[in-house]
Image (cartoon, rainbow, N blue to C red):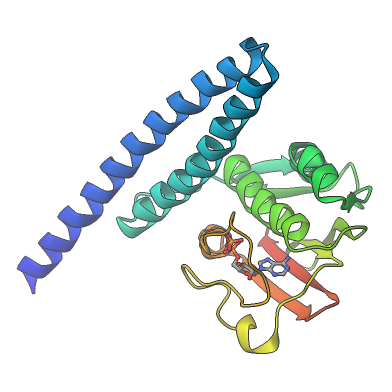
Length: 229
Ligand code: ADP
């Protein structure tokens, strides 16, 4: 048994190192391709450069997620909670997805988050969780649909809600969407890996919180994060 544990530890460490190096390499590709996209003038070359940027961005998201997972596997992932002003985090995340939402013809509603509301969270990880949820809410939506983020203080903590008017999640898939590499069958998106929700749930749980889902297929989804004080 000890040998097995040792082998597992080596495997986890190996994965963490490999995904870390991959992530950094791909970030290099991303920076250079963005530079190229800005510098080239010829329209046909610009289209090619944009293609490289988009692929690099997709790879970069993927390797970030894989690196986080590898660190969770070796329990190297730590959260350092501090007092966060929720409105600031929410505004940053919504700004991050403004362009994507325009592309997808989805409206990001004005957030309902009191400017004074604070919570205890690791700011980088909280942003990562909300980015995943907002990104999904836009991605699995319809043209003309919308996304609303709200937050309120509840007993012993805060509740953050990300609500969309999108395709929803069929009942039989709801229990599994938080599992690794699991996607529902009601979409065919290529920019989908089935990693985001598994990571988000683990991150919220590392804070002692919960991540819950309510959804009606064809009508939309509501993801609720609870973070304790
Ligand atoms: P990804 O989006 O990369 O596939 P996630 O783990 O974030 O990975 O999501 C897993 C699956 O859950 C998605 O493939 C999709 O089927 C479903 N899903 C997640 N969020 C939503 C949402 N807001 N509306 C509808 N389906 C969703």
